Image (spheres, rainbow, N blue to C red):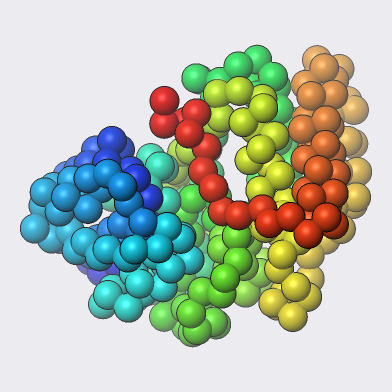
Length: 282
């Protein structure tokens, strides 16, 4: 069985970090998964809760509330490659993580992720309509890694040194690899809870867009298809399905308005920092 390290940045995640770790450990009786939890800038008991789950969990504490600082600290303490980087608020099992290890160790890819699912069961109507369209987007269906989970082989991790100070770490990593160097595992998935409210969804998209804009061309190893082209492809997919047209109107607003807002805020010199959606933790 291939060993793999998992780095988990965690900021004030005492309520959810325990069940997440327990789920992974229960599915890995042979101990092939090395777990490194990096409690960053916590004001709660995240570190204590994580350490109490099992002796095999390594807990690192950094004073700065920064995901990037946590990722770099986790890299310094993790001992194994391949390596996965997993957000504390995702739902993933050991089978998916071990499958990533096998694919990456076998040389089939340099970067990989399970299928990404969004759980909208606790979300309002507008959010659910948004994700009905999002499921059909090219971003969702072509070589996607990130959005909470991504893993790299030893050769893949050599593509960059430390994580740079960016908001969109997953986007930064995805752009290190061409499409044929990435794998999405069709038989394994992880899930992330969608925001409960459309306002929270808009705030999330503003942050994502600002993070993407923050990545300069010098950081982009792989050319990115223009957003207008991707949106045009999506429109063609939806055009033949009238039942989706109301959902498309919601998606179009949720796609365009945050991008205008992030461009306006960045143009005024305002900082849009890394943040998290508290509605998914309610």
